[in-house]
Image 1 (cartoon, rainbow, N blue to C red):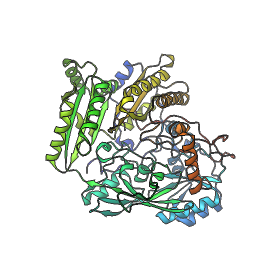
Image 2: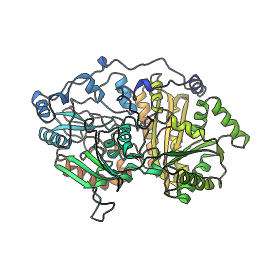
Image 3: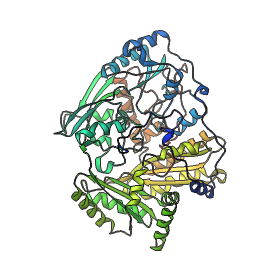
Image 4: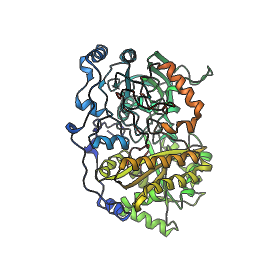
Length: 584
């Protein structure tokens, strides 16, 4: 079984994934951080589950009985473990709180519906009883998207997390049209394992692949590591079944394209559970790859590497482009090669010998079913790359990246346990702004964290390229200050203000959640926010669906429930999934 179909146990509540999968940071890694002024602090392990402080359950017996009547007695959970495991996602604030025993974001209950009908009835019951509903898939949100927080000024009787793990089936495969219909609770490996007997793949592999769910992919407008070849999730989703408090929506799926008015499907893609709960989704699938080719190149600067990727995106074009295109900037390349030990040192010496004293690394992967076609695709791409000033490296460098592509987030847990602040944030912009935005956001992060002479590492990579532009994914590492949450909020604000000023998007693929909501109007305008509010009011009149997420607090609102049942949160950063350079 390969890494794409291998399931791991559901994530531990205080960190990422299965701790048995983690590999500790090497001695060389700690030495490198020390040389940069980031000292290893004393061990700070998470508290025991029994020590997490939870709010009292606000729902009474009548409300809980109404929920049980929908899903059955065994699928409404109010015990400690279920509540703690649904008390947030994987953002830095979520984990920082939970590691210290703060379970204030926990729901009153966790409900497990079995099918689309039960989801629909749950929303009707919760609407009538004014119970807030937080849809929950893999729990991998890194923008505060799944905590029981932010009532938007509305008081609720309580809040339930609707865990979709029981909706875990591949419902239909259309081999002729290359379409597949899934329930939302399938995790990444489940998707690939279900498609494998049909010779198909979804081709969507975010770094959260082992934990995230198909419903989460669609609801957050996700982008996988191979999106340059297979497309983002919004490129490949064609139809959906959606439960809302007003009734069921059946969207798209009838044809490959339509001119029948605005595409309502796009209202739900990226809506983060604020308009409805996805109960089925039909997506385009592709033949399962049987062959791969790899390449790695060094370029003399981030600008040179960016120009090389721009040449690929604009001159090679769809169908021939590598499925994976990644460019690490100078700092990320240096750190990655330092962590690679002797082989990394050898690559640095190779670069210096060829007049590349501070090189950047490009990783390319092509995959498909025809080895000859792959060889042609690689040949076409490398003709473009040779026009620049790059130097080709052994393909094993790219293979090494692929081997560890899902392991990075585990290192964040280790660093947080040593009182080191580590997080990520991402954006995207057009090619003409890319270099400037890279410099300005990096500078904003560094300036925010260098307070008091603190050592800082700021790294960045491009992981998604388009004909018109590319993404930027930043990783930053610094010793914790006396107030890590204030430190976190400061760096988030500084970086996002730089993104907005520099013409980037506030999020390329992490979503909005709570963390990015204060800046949404800077991207879509006040009128755009009003339009989204109007749509939500039509589909969710009582405002029960994932309150406080996506939309900024209404003017004059406290941002939380009047009676404190649904607690407000202070807007903060988009912490990304890992602390290491290889994040996406």
